View 1 (cartoon, each protein chain N blue to C red):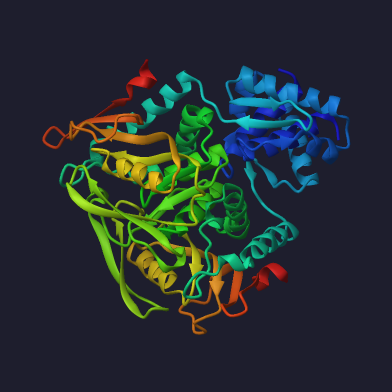
View 2: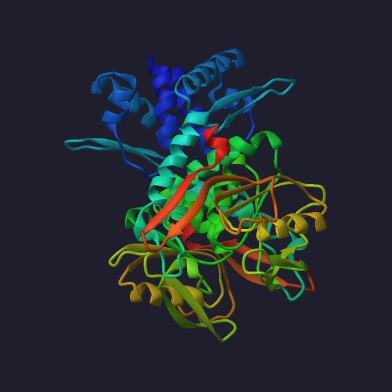
Length: 270
Length: 270
């Protein structure tokens, strides 16, 4: 196989499995070429991705040697994507009875989810989470793409436990907005003790769910290395957590004027 | 940019968004090269993917012209992947109190989910589904990857509706295994009338859920073009549907002998 062919094959392998470390030897064996030749191939892919802001090809040196693709986005790209989502959120047809905003179509779009996955992978990749944790239901598609972008398993906390989970740890928590006592439970098998976890959810009001998830992680003796939410609403003013990373602020839903007021989060604008 | 660089960039774009049709003009503009040059680049990528069984690069002819990457797997690859999953399922440590089998770790693995997504995309891609539909909760990560592999939105049917969904259609259905009356509901906005939908779930016993989903799709005047399940259990013997595609049969869970008896579905072996 000539260089152009090898580059097509290597790029495919790297891109379809972000964050995963491939041994350089794997590729050398596949194409039956010298490691020095492969290093040149990888240098071309790396330079191309860098020139076109397509993420990063990272070479890991050492006895074995490895290479991986990181779906990192630039600040400008993140802002562009988040502005796009904001523009779609401003559509007045999203306003539902009761002043809610319909977002299910957004969090069902494969392209939007991939982008959001890359944004959170960019924001939290250096914290090296070993698991992405979310609570059912609407957060799952988002968390699933973050887990994919980071090449780590997705753990789903249930509202109600099921017999197919085996022994579970169940915890009550106070939902911040509704001031209601709610329940979450997670299989004892789902998380090894001492794991580094990233919490992801689609929507945050007071932060009661993320607060509860954080406490639950404590029960599993896991450390929370980050908390990401797609949309944070301005109300209630008092939040139960303050170290989370939202992508979008929902400032107001004006039912009378038929306006959804949203903007990119401060860290994206700065 | 030289050919090797262009091939790295084009491969990246195509692979990170399976099934999506890219205009050849998009790439020609990006690199400022003639269409004939790009056609040669694409021919190299196509030949490489074909030689290495890495899926298919499909060129769509016509006035505009387009190209897309289809994550198609060969019969041998599908069998290999399914055998791998079976081997993991046979681990006796998966047996839970009550004779259930723990599978949450499998359906949380990003690499396994990507593979399963590609298998169902291979099986159902020609039916050209416009939506992938599943019911919360455990089916979501699987369905999410199928939707991604097909570049179509994922629609999640709820057990209980939420105010953030707007007006919903709620339906009762009889779960086949527990013989219980259960409820599913879906936002009126979630599916346009007349859509072609693919149903995906992680686990099927009698098929009551898939039967219910099919009926619900009828209420939305959508046509079901396929039904895929990751694992189908041998019991109960009487099934409520018969036109579904499982990947794995769970024949028995022997609590006494500590054995999980699984095998690839017939269509994979044939």
